[in-house]
Length: 178
Length: 273
Image 1 (spheres, rainbow over the protein chains, first blue to last red):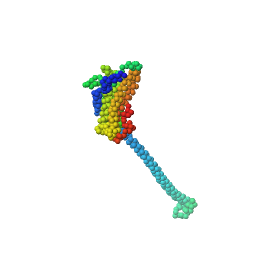
Image 2: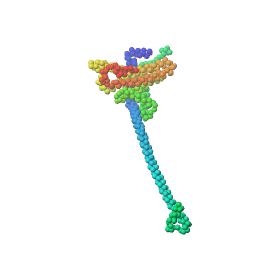
Image 3: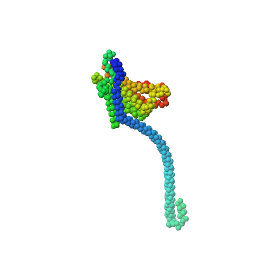
Image 4: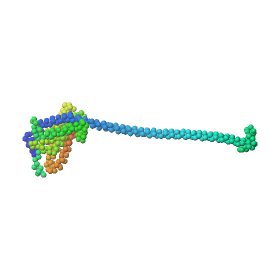
């Protein structure tokens, strides 16, 4: 109330609303000039640095965002490539396994055939050897038999028997032995 | 309580009070506080710039940078022309920080209890009409300067003066626009002054009313006033940008469209705080 009364009395006393409100043109001008100097000083020496840092930060964020987006795309590409490679690898592996199986079967067959051949060869060799041995044994037995027959004939007839004496006699003796 | 309230001698003066004179210019208590506010603001910003230049960041620097970045984003959003936005940035941001710090200085407890010759040594600069009016004049003049730079002298004049024979409605609209320019400036000055002055009075009244409980009640009102201070600083800042943006935007073919809906969309004063 006191203020209002003071305000009213000032207005009526001087007749100036500006004076009542405390507006002094010199002070106002001084404050405007001071403020403009402040704006100029800050605009010259302070804000450029702050704006630069903000711009750098924004650029950094944009670059990071771009890099992140690119990394995401690259990751997706890599994932696709990995999946593709995995698929190819699986196919290759399946091929390799199939080929290996075929090769192993073939190798097995070959080795079996070789082994069979070898076994057959061994058997045939053995049979030939046996036949040879049998023949040799037969021959030896024959010779021994002949000797025995000769000896027995000698004892029977009392003289040394030779092939010249009587082949017929010898053959008869052999038949008798048999 | 009411009796005690009635007997208290309030010392509330609309005008800033003179402390002394230098060369015929009165130095008021608001100017002293304004000087302190200016020193604080410059010190803070120089400190932040020093830290930014040396790359030594801390939370406070981050906070100031965050606010600065937010203000820059607002400028870029409101002013479509990026070159103009960068030009108007120093004024707009200085207005914001300067108004904010000076408004907040009025919340300092015991601000007006230091007396020199019965006059408080300190008084918030935002509660001095000289400052708010000066700031409004600077804004209006700056807006006109950029409008002339963009539209030319005649182009800018055409916003206010049109041939009443050819375009009577446009001519009337021009006159309204001219009155609007004056009222915008006045509103800018009075809004800030009114809020700051009312805030100071509110704190004094609350302190007197709550008496011994003032230390409990005042912090709430101070916090509220801090918020109001931020709002006022931002309103002054954003209105400066909006007025600049509107002034440099050519109306083009829509200049003859006087639809009330369109008018309310483009008029920032409609529904203003």
